[in-house]
Image 1 (tube, each protein chain N blue to C red):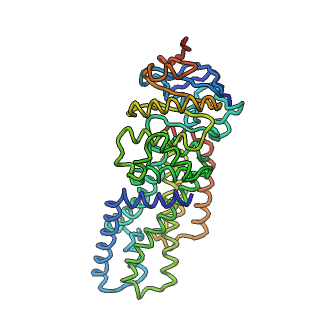
Image 2: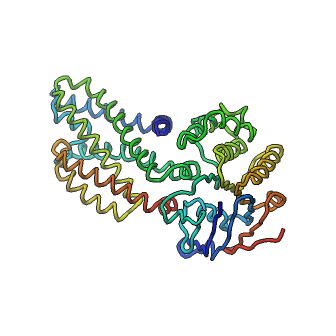
Image 3: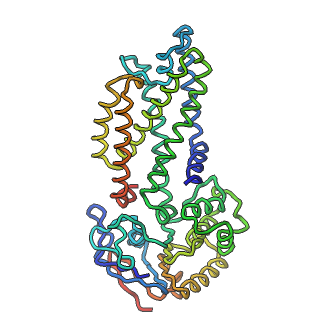
Length: 212
Length: 215
């Protein structure tokens, strides 16, 4: 999988959020996006997911312009700006509901993912009763459960205890070895410093690649 | 899709409890009031008035009931439709084509309207043993189609404002000039609904990013 971001500019009215961004992201690597809140990280992630359209430029998935084709990037899962689930369903029911859309996994895979994010014990609790950390874990489980090729994580370790965060970092390294393309956005550099292969800094619409 | 629709029902009944209760209380109160005023005369006019569907004339109560009836169903449809767009972007739109999502959502809204209307009819049937069963069924069909058309028009209107003005104009000629839901031409109604649904599929597919950015 190769994602090419070519001359991408994004404006909201007259406000330039991203200015002529160029980047190539490839399988088997972890990419880190760092920058303060509002620096355009989430906007770029949303454009990669084809939720937002670039004002100019293009984003290609293996040469295919997903936004132009009115489609959505295949085999891609994301958590952007926090998780959102149905409050009256349990954690597991929420995941079952989502798994029912593409029907590529069953209950067994969901339970394995819940164990991975250390949420198995709380799977039968209603989402509305979850703590911030538990909500975040469910959001991550939603991303990992269907074994996607592209993993997009916006502030993934928000509210998660050290033990689980460490476990997830190891998991992401393993996924990278399997050839996954992983993007992690955060405002805390230390969160991703040792994890990523390439690091990009977002500042006032401009993106610069940092030396590791 | 089946699980999603069931979940939409579950969510609506849980999150809109107060609205649902208000709707049925107003409906029953108004029906009892009309029953009292009409001095036990239950006919088609009584049925139409009870559902707030008779808008000819300038009776303020009739106009209020008509507005309440429509607003209730539109509010339910809009909240059901935009909940996913606002909250479930990552969860849904990386798994499902937006066209497919639109169709599922529209089916969900249609079935929800049928269920709520059926419940109102069930309550009404206590009073309506004198009304012809055939007319009763026809009335149900007309009202559900009428409400569904309003819901689709408003949803498309919120997303695509210019399209809304155009649809509203047609809607006026198809519906409101009659002043009585039973007098609306059924074929014209179905044609309008068909056109607006196809238009919806086309617009949603063409403008996915615009919709998600707006929400």
